Length: 253
Image 1 (cartoon, one colour):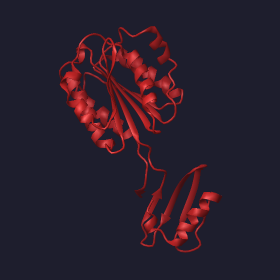
Image 2 (cartoon, helix red, strand yellow):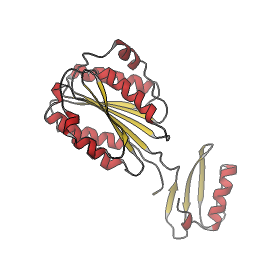
Image 3 (cartoon, helix red, strand yellow):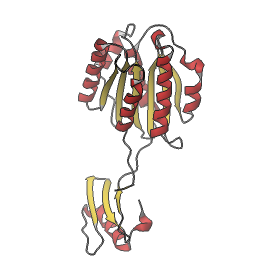
Image 4 (cartoon, rainbow, N blue to C red):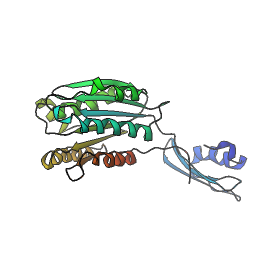
């Protein structure tokens, strides 16, 4: 908040706003206070130079949990594109001084590649961690991604789970399948699932899964990269996810 740019009158109005909820201007400066929740103020004020600022609660730190398919069909250009786009997304939306990323991979089993870290480049650059083989336990992976993300969230972070798979689930447990059908992720969480050249039937399955998660109160969307765009279509999908990861703070209107 630009307290140094506020007049004494505006500072007084803000103090009153915390107690009364709404304060109106009595001179040329304007202050509009909206108490959307009991402890959160959204304020528009005009400083003496005429610039308008929005005052909103500071954004919570961000925790992105990537859940990435490393089954045999992901080898080559697919896993390379996934790694490139994870890096680009983190460069665009994350601040390594406060935000974290975790990495989970899956084929016939689910592996925690890296617990939450701000050293994500080192994880993405390690070729040995991204070797592809075996089958696809995608339900197990999403179940574990949400569960572990919730466990890792210790500072009130915004949790974003991004899963990418390129094939039909063929070896998850029945327990995970049932849990996914009733998955609830808690507050301040979003789940995004990307199907990469997996075919219309697989894309439809994950579209239904995400629709169910969304209905139960957690923002969730699925994205399908089909053969018309090829692996390059992953760039566009990650761009859409970037747009969905909102930030808050003080910004000039």
